[in-house]
Length: 188
Length: 156
Image (cartoon, each protein chain N blue to C red):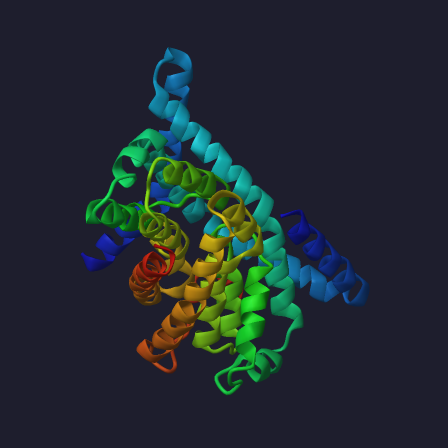
């Protein structure tokens, strides 16, 4: 009974992304055929924009993650960004994140492989924090539309906030916590 | 974005020059990871597309460009749920400011937008596990609130 239910859940889990995609496609198609259906057009346009963004960012990201995985030994990550690396890793994690581009979900793959290679959770979350708040391409947009005062104030306040959050994250997780290995091909 | 392709391309060339077998392994690993998460990503993005289409810039203007605590609260909530790329979000924030949105509201909207992602939770959980995803988003929400309040104090 329970295994049966688990099987059903797995099927639902595998199907819902395609159902949602089909829904957007159907709404867009309907809007094109009937006309005057702004919601369908907008949803379709949003999805196309997202897909273009995904296609322009994810291939190089995953290629770099694969190369990182193969070439960088665990000891190196552990020594420079592990639990005993102290504070010197912090500015480097922030700098690394600032040079990135793209939506936050593009940062997850690299953050996870860092974590698996022995990077401390604190440094992983500092990386994610800096990625979400301090990406240089994003800052240029911010300065253009909201002014340098706004940008400067937000940056100055954000850095201590996400560093403190990262320290809290590390404290809240069990010491031996490791991210799940589901998407890792070597685990299969 | 072009920068990213150049770096990845250069890394690939160097890797190929040094060790072909290792490079092959790296490419296989990377593409397997990508294909493993791609369906979930597509689903999440489809959901976000549907949600975003229901909200027009006009509506945001009406909800966020007033005084008092309500626009601030709404900015926190909308920013947490939505996933809007920076090149759309910042022009939108600029328009909101011209329509009288306060610094606090703009800061709340922008910071939650960047740090908190309710709709992308399934994706985050796929990489880090549900526990990490929930804790990170809850903490990030508090952090965004702190940032927004500090900015209100500093800039007004």
